[in-house]
Length: 398
Image (cartoon, rainbow, N blue to C red):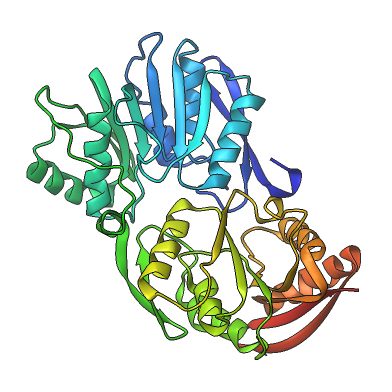
């Protein structure tokens, strides 16, 4: 991971050595190793030599890399829907010399063949993922267990009543292995007569059944939102993004860039406003990108389809041929000043002659970050408007 993305560096003692884990901004548990992860690592089952192991929702790799260190003859697959997490887990594996661990992007089990079999599947189950995906997770994992294999979850204690209810409804074999202050370790084993019930299908009905949360009205558009997805807090959706839309020109730019697609709010609002423009957007979370495409299909907006680029880091996704007349987006406080500078540096080279960027950010970040960044990157920054603690700045090469 490039230095400007690194937020923390953790040391994890395991198997007589210390794993060094580099942690980027904005992933889960960046200030310390999560208590649930540590509890699960303290209650692992015995690992047979030469096993195939799976870390589901790997983050930066704490669970999967510990497995790889404990059982060097085993093969560990780490998957996550967040492409930044996948990139970091792979880099942490390489930095620790764990050649038996690999990382791959996957939304749920989409990238894992139904025929694959694992002796052990670990997962720190998200607290907000909802019952439909919980059933999909447990059923899909048990279908992929080798004979005698085990799914071992860590869950916050608040989830236990729901997991117990689902266990009774689904007929699972669930055993509580251990309990900490705020988490429980749960074990699931597949029955011999189990038949395949889950699907890797990416169709809209399946996506909504597994992840659908509710609908949100934004800029006159009805957008479906997924569960367990950040970035749509009330302040941002009610104040920041509407202010950004208010700053946009009336005449349509030929080529538009929307930072951070999310589940489609900003790029689809741009598509509705500028049906004749070419629009490109970036997203690192496969769940957000999937819902953005779903929302675009549902809305049937005029104009060419939005062009989606998926990757870990916005600044790494620009191509030499990119030339945008207008770039629209946000500078995120959770990413830090160095990431903001790298993004603006990359954006500077992607603007067409006479092009500009309209960016929304907290007023305090404008004072703290933007002046120094603009000076170092030879950018001109003009405040267009401010409201409710947010400000819009127009950025052009100086």
